[in-house]
Amino acid sequence: MRQLISPEALRVFRQSVQGSVGFVPTMGALHAGHRSLIERSRRQDDVVIVSIFVNPRQFGPQEDLSRYPQTLDADLALCEAAGVDAVFCPTAEALYPRPSDRSTGVQPPAELIQSLCGRQRPGHFQGVATVVLKLLQLVQPQRAYFGEKDAQQLRVIQRLVEDFNLPIAIVPCPTVREPDGLALSSRNRYLTFEERSQASSLYRALRAAAECFQAGSRDSQELVAAATAVLATTPAVQLEYCDCVDADSLQPLTQIPDRALLAIAARVGTARLIDNLTLQGRRPIIAIDGPAGAGKSTVTKRLAQQLGLLYLDTGAMYRAVTWLVQQQGIDPQDPIVLAELLAQADLQLRSQPAADGSEQLQVLIQGNDVTAAIRTPSVTAQVSAIAALPLVRQFLVEQQRQLGQRGGLVAEGRDIGTHVFPDAELKIFLTATNAERARRRALDLEAQGLTVDLAQLEAEIRDRDRQDSERAIAPLCKAEDAVEVLTDGLSIEAVADQIIRLYRDRGLGDSSPQATPGQTPSPLSLG
Image (cartoon, rainbow, N blue to C red):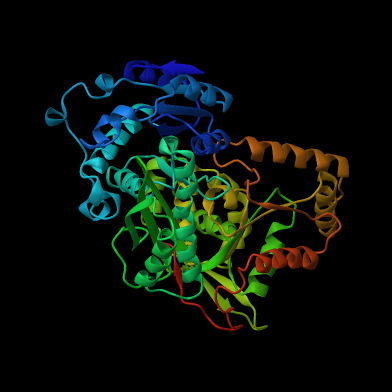
């Protein structure tokens, strides 16, 4: 692991590395929450860079800059143990060679910083946005990882990347908590033993409001009242705010639709602590990952039918783009032409009633119904090559995530739970032994009149697993919170029943009425 001090050294290091780069910006005093960000990057990226910098421009005059915990030696040890490749530890003079009144800064949109912490910390998010832009420009990562505990900061950074057209994916990561629910924070070090016990009431307050929401309340005042009632029992907690805001715009809400951010800030002793929960009223998402031959597609279709969910056929989406490339006669290896094509692509999925009362998927692109055309041999022959193109993958993953905002779907693939829908309510890793997968493949081939060699099939499966697991973009791996289901010796019905039991045991089946067979949902525009 390299420790880099100057921006010049960082640039030299960055130029020397190959493969994808993940970046985790921190202010040091690292804990298990930071480590979870590093580990997420370690799983997805070839090179991991961490920055440790206490940014003076995001602290107000009366805030804790002078006593913010700094534990560089312990931080470096944690980074090395977690497999970090380089740690950037600049001085303030190196990052800010000119005084603030003589240097360029970033002004986030007012709508994102006038609520929540922005009211109590004027200038804070300007300082955050400025330093993050500087760091992103220096590191030039493919992905940067931020914790969801700092929800307002996360949204400001997402907008920063959008507005400046930075080619960087901002990866939100779940809040890591103590067993009693207290969100991990470097400022927890300020708490005395008694204050530490009192601080856990912040999470209990959020949970009380979330339970009120799940019980059907959509009035923000009722939810805030449920939270503040919990805090009233802990006098050491001095509430600054408890607000319900739109999860994207951060604007205050009176009535909550399907999704909102419930955020809280309070002082406990000398520590200012923040926390939040996302209130989600949409129907759940089931994400099914696993290697080839595990039965993912068949199981996913059956689950969609039995649970009244949309089957998100990601393969059909890649096929539709392949069809469009062929129709336009463009060279898919020309990234400029391909980018122009994707920028104008209008892809839609529609669920249509079939004659037997089930639902079938209709695929349209540029207004053309290509449901049958995308299954032709010409598309099949080229779809793997098209799907491997980073531009195509980036485009379709974004479309899938937009569709996921509505919930109520089940999707399968090799990185649906880890990359496309990391916040899915139920994640399944469907697998089978190599021998069983080879046996299934042999049956398929024999049904086509082909002669098969089981040993060769098993070797091919091992090789494909290795390639899928080691690929640079979104490799195949089991999500930490996924339930593994081994399908050896199980029928499709038995596998589906097992997943449905998990779905209902988690209380997901009652989130809204199931779709009525034969009912035609509105078109799902993905363009």
